[in-house]
Image (cartoon, rainbow, N blue to C red; front, top):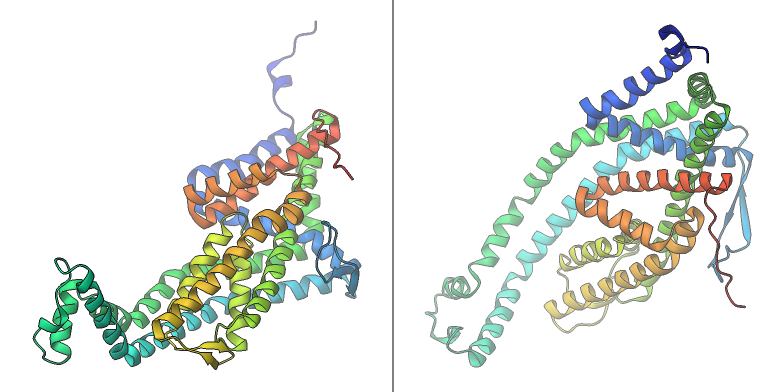
Length: 424
């Protein structure tokens, strides 16, 4: 056997370039600058998943409208065409940058408007609230005289006497709430200041996505050349390149699947809030429908998030009456009306969450990705609980790495999954 010298054992120039590529752009940033690495990789992965949809739009994408039947998409009814791929890239880039520029100020305005409206409503209805609280305390005293003091025995000094009673029983909760609400505007400004850096990153990320899509062919040729030049084994090189293609397909399927689920749930929310007597205006219904729809579409935990959002949006709407579009049909009193509307929207959110968990996500996302319910649930819960919302996004990207490896193994015949045929 011919012995190889030390020089012969050294990696080729292509191998050195590949190793340095991995060290410079992956290993070193992941170890020394994790936040920056996570940010840029997340942006790049989003662009990678968006690319197939750019191609589809340039070729003419068909859109389906209607309800699914037996897991099948409705007939195609609309086709969107663009003159060229460059036009699609320009349109998507402008939309992404515009959306990221406006979404944070718009949400801040909505939050501030809602908080100020809640404060005004609370100030207006405070006498009624205290009167109802007094009635509640009288009933509570009749049931638990040893625990709840007698309202009638409290020295009557107007609101001061009643306030002292409230202090004894509730720990001055109403006063604390009023003081807290007075600071709402300041707190929101502080919050926006805290989020400003993330907002700037979001806008920069949208610009980077547009740049990647605009120079896609050049970027792909460069990276494929580096990988091809650094891996001499033809079979291994082919598998690595194919794995990248499958991973891109997985991200693309997840993005379009999430968008389909979110838009479907948003439409159902809007229809449900129009039918149910929530006393909301059409603008509020549309805004809340899209917010709750996109929140509910987050796999497995979106229903809980939507219920929490529903509670906050409705419990702060201190207006009496139950009806449609500002017209009151019946009223049972301020608190009963508020609680009834809140409970009704939370029930709607719960039903939408069940649709997401047991119908739309398994059919639209799970079936497309070829992942089981357990794999999806485990991925979402582990990362959501352990690393928060953005950690959950990273958990999805990581799970798609497994999904791409599984599909590659199935293509090469290393893994064979036999699916049971459903009885007719």
